[in-house]
Length: 613
Image 1 (tube, rainbow, N blue to C red):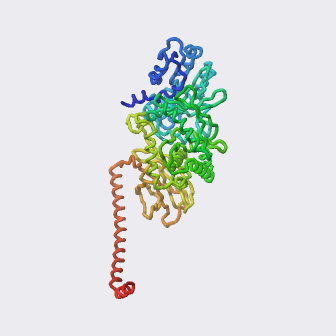
Image 2: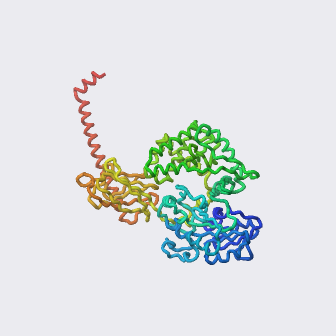
Image 3: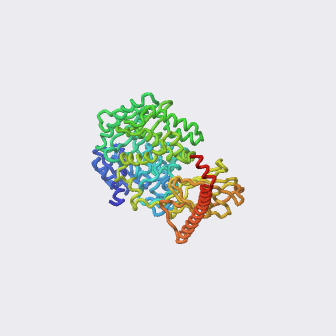
């Protein structure tokens, strides 16, 4: 099956509309090429699906349409209780800023550079949409924000439930044509969320226009998992009350939903005596494939932890980790246990006063699991989703060690996580799994995320975070080294690399006592430390510019024969240096051996050895 077929037929294409309350006798009018993906899904639910108007309809769904043409006609197309659904692309969406090219464009940043024909009738900002709705007499509507976009809605937010810090962390997601990847999107989303500007830069908008607006305020789709584990989580607000519903996405997953209720009862026993409190759960009356949960109005633990790190409050951060570890050990006193909620990570704890409410406990395991694996997962997922955490802790092992995890077992936990994801994660046929393995899907240029740290002795003098595009496997950038610095530390956040420093300023760059001049060094722990001294061995007295090249190990290539020849020359020089050093050490060994032989053959040694015996 080619990508076009996978894209068109994927179940997640329907997520954006599957929560709508379609009825068997409804008539639906679909407008726009993008709505073709809904035809098969809707034909199982409603009586009529049309692409051309023929009478009045219960639903009109418009996909990237010219609103100045659609809105004047919409009222005549809808019956008195009908609903208009607008699915619109935001030309200023984060994905476009990050180099996405939609299937309707032919060049990068067309919507940003005002070079897109779709800006004149198909793409609209939220302000433009609301102004047009008012202009044509539509005053009752509700705005939703499909994430990452309307074609692949894994989550749907609303003005009543906007995303929180750290939630928008999907870096790779399906797309129709091709794209670049210029920055880590979560970082920009977090800044937009802090500034209250997320809605202006959301990738897509879904507007429901109706006199009877839906009560849904949030939806999360987990419907590309392995068979029997697919669910949808919805949050509703009705008559001032909020509540959560988890339901099976398909008939095969009904047993999984019912098992969550049993897990809730078992966790209550484990949590007795701790500050953990399992989110209250009950079966919906007359419904065997859905559960109702109490809505918890509090702050996620990972958000509190991230706020403390942002303020530089390491002590407060570690106090939260200590409290977490205490509660985990109280709930699970044995090192290996049954009923371990392996997803009891910081993101799934909502803090209300002194109680830590545990949500999303569907992965409470009936078989035996090591408790330290849970702690490993909590640290692992927080570290790689929190930019503040990565800034303050260059090495995740520092946090593993603080939590008392055995360093020799981390690699085992890494493999356990891979096995766990294979057990509960996305099926191999999921569209999200095709991104990196199908050439028709993944055609992205990559970026490398680099951090440079400057030291004077053991004192950190500054940090520079850099996002560098990778071109033909090479990421090149100039680095300004401040005065008074005698040590440079280079860290690659996301891949193993080779480092090449070009020295054009008579600067000696020393690593482990070996002089580095225009040389390549590999490292696999994603950090390399250089000692920087001037010709007379003192610290730098003024700023200098050095050029650094990072060669991605998973995309390493030599651009020219000269590069290859130069690299071989350097390698030969290194070999000769080490041979010379080895020869010198062998000479020392030979001298010592000769001295020992002379001692052993001396009369004094022969006499002494007899006395020792």
